[in-house]
Image (cartoon, rainbow, N blue to C red; front, side, top):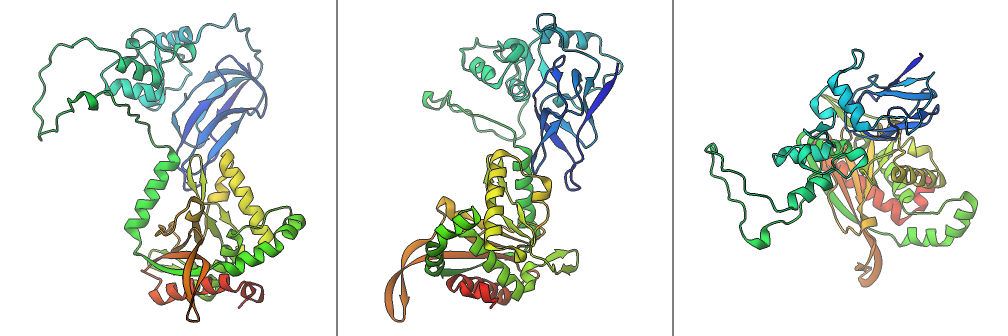
Length: 424
């Protein structure tokens, strides 16, 4: 018998752990080489793990929702075996009960109790979210009728069980609380209102961690300015069709903001710098992070050497990032690094915000919705498409002068796009 080990791939240096999302195969099923076995979630991306060879899944060592590290064995594949007929395969429940009664000596034990589904007295298997709810409500998996695959108890099953009328339980002496607690609501209108408790994804937890880190470690200050977008709108309207025909991509607005930001960073390099201990690191390159919304949360893929990219190159790359974010295909390399970031809340209708710096960077540009507003030009009130810009910066190394002048440089570049062509 030839056995192949399925291992967690190498993660980036900044990623210590990952979570197994859902196995696409069960024990005893055949698998082809390079067929996706399971999706692995890190705090940055979701990775597909292809099978290292063809054969039969002999053993799944780590179940769904298990926490794993790089190089850890999570499954075994028998390359000599053949998939057993479905009718001959023992039910999943019997297999699990048999393995619980006599575990194989070669099977590694799960690292922690939460890495495996909880089972009840009746042999039911509770999925991780359901197991948590069961524990919180002093129930066991055997108390709930499972409707999931192979009789598994799902979160919905637990919710349905909790909504059923329950017989009064015998009173138990309760320990006296250290602090007086607010009593549960007794009004019928406040009872049986639905709630759902779900664990944060690794990405969401990482976002929360980094935002708190940014707030606590940076001296964040924000400066604002307004920009008349009419020149950019006119230029885009004039060349939009020709641009799309020539380059095969639509001409948007983000490429102009990227170019304007790079122009300002060249004039004021401290805005493109970062803090490392007691040192200031001046970056001789311009890697611009573009905040992109995805089904898993906010991600910031990086435009490498944005100063060397054309408008068309930028639009194509941003389009590629958007598609990869939507499909969960962004790679660790796409998200690593960056010297300055741009966040566009305007696509959601935001008028004004104070963006939070993405560490270890020292500044971030927030752009917003362009709206027609009354402004004064040459003593006359006129209507112009205005956009409010916000530059949040780390006041530890960036003084107000550089921050304000840097934002003014971005404003001037957008209000006179020819500056971007002439490097002015």
